[in-house]
Length: 449
Image 1 (cartoon, rainbow, N blue to C red):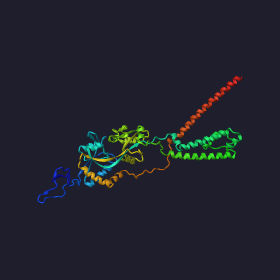
Image 2: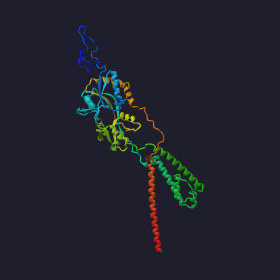
Image 3: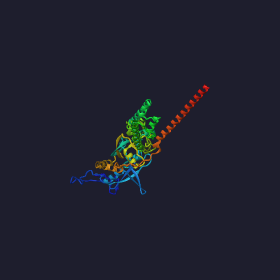
Image 4: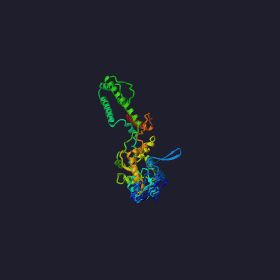
């Protein structure tokens, strides 16, 4: 019996037929009971050609002491398989705009995918999703799943006036306004009463009770105090009330200004479509997005990288989101934790298998399926991934005091400017009124004479 054994000691890719068994006519027996030997049990250190491209965290290009080293959990998976089956890796990096590769419905391809389809490489790996088009023209081995998510812009920052109002809730402001209205109403009604009633409630020495009310409200100094015990008790209670409210407001406002408070971001896919967000994705996602709500608002990434658009989502006014795997965003946030954090949309689009690809009907598929299944059952593939994506690594926020910038305090300046403008308008109106009074008096004097 003859067959080929592609991997032998000191021989790789040998397709010449070899005698693997003989039948003894006299004994009516085969010389070996193993009629169909496992030809891929041992690769004898023969190289397996891997076609890939740089795509962290699956494929990472590190520079250690001037030496470029390719790492990543996909490479670690292949190295583990190499130890199990005794083969070595011959990694061929593809570079360029379409390095990741593409394949169309008619079978035309490019990049990494083309090398595998043309038989120039044994395996294509690098975070590839399982798609119908790829499965039609290539064999595959599934080794995991990933969640496809959106990276969205943060909520729009609060305006200057919103920051001033935010420390108290709507009902708190409503209660304060009602309290102040009642106080002003009491003063107005008291001013209509007899002098002894006024003296009892607001005091007799108060020529401008409304201004005094505002002065107390802003914790201003009191040059005169009422003489009656009742009015003094009212004043004391109101002073205490204003002091407590002002202290709580100042504390809440200072704490609030030190946080990055924003309007809430959109929470559902329907809201993203309603607000006319564009969905930026690679060409490989176009096939996966067919039939989904987002398909008609897709924007294919051609001349840019997806990271370019992911960084644009840091702008709260950017009207777009990116579509991609959670692992990619997770790794990017982990590596740039001190500079920025990309915001992940709470709703997951879908989960999809991750696969490595071989030429169609390649002999490596079956043995790779078997070994990958063993690693997956043992939980070793998850362990490899978590080596590069650390869920337990938390960024500990610093609680040192934060200096308030002009941006934090701009609301106060706006109020000052508006107050000055209103004061100037009041000044002009006062001059106009005084001028008209003077003119009327002059006319009266002339008519008298």
